Image (cartoon, rainbow, N blue to C red):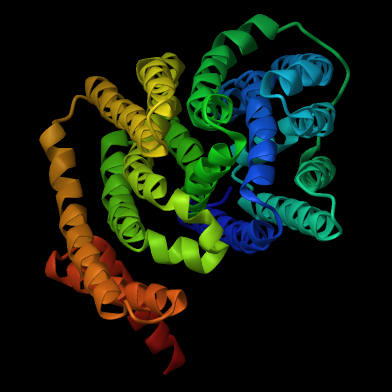
Length: 479
């Protein structure tokens, strides 16, 4: 089994590779497709994302954290996932015409029909993917996800360049799923069987259902902004909001998706081994916050230049919502760590409660905000994210019996470093305002990185010591 450091290194490496591929493809697609076309695809894919959370039934997370994963339980998990996934494929296909009428856009229905093929394919490889995560075989996951992302990006960009329009994005998604399932079966299907069996289905659902409920609420909160805006305002407005979420989400995923798959298995193993979870949690928060808070601060400052550089001036209306969303993403990065500890302890009931607390209010505010402006919608999203973050921290405090003051002290240096980096970014932006968008972005990046490094030294942050030690070791190895 991979150690935590090697697992994190591999997982983060994988996510940066995936991020780079998605980053390049998003730039290309933003210059090929119009905001309206992006909006059409976004509505269709987001509607199905809610079904994906239901399709999984929380089984993937159940497999990762289950202490006694018997063959009967594994067979029940596989059988349940196939039944629900294939049923949802039929429902999505049939409902696609009604959804198209609801939005008065046939293209939304076309997207639903193509993407419903994913429901047919995914249950064949989902259990194998979960077993790879449980075993912390992140080297195999790196190969699978990189290949799938290349397939999705290649098909999407290629099809759109040939004039397919928004439907090319849907076929790209199907291509990525096909590669994922094929490689997952090849690399991680040892001991797997597709023979139907439901002997342990009650146990699987009793635990997995809580994860599933939380995932559905999370996806509802994530998808509802564009779905609501697409209906209340316009598909073009949904495209702008989707681009705002996309540019912030790319950064968030590059930071968190490499770490998040490692956190829950790590905390679950630490809990099984009787280790001090709070010390592990505090160290994770201290190191993560000094990356996420400064990065999202500087991203918000330079957002106008970044959007202009990457996507062109036709996406200018996405800038202000994206700035607001940076606040929520910085907070949610902390909530991910907190939630991973709670889930790793086997307290799956709280995973659902976190979402029950934040998502309903978030959705209500989104509906209200949609009648005002995209900025109000973004503010509603941030409000829900902050509520989930604070509530999850309160729950963890009850479980581990620690002082909130200890956590605040651990995060405070990161806030100071973020302010220093943000001011440096703002100054660089002002000085380079006469340059091109590329010049402004490069100036902001250089100034922010220098200020961040200075902040690490001034605050004597342990990550700074780690970086210095790493460079010393490399220099010693060369000499």
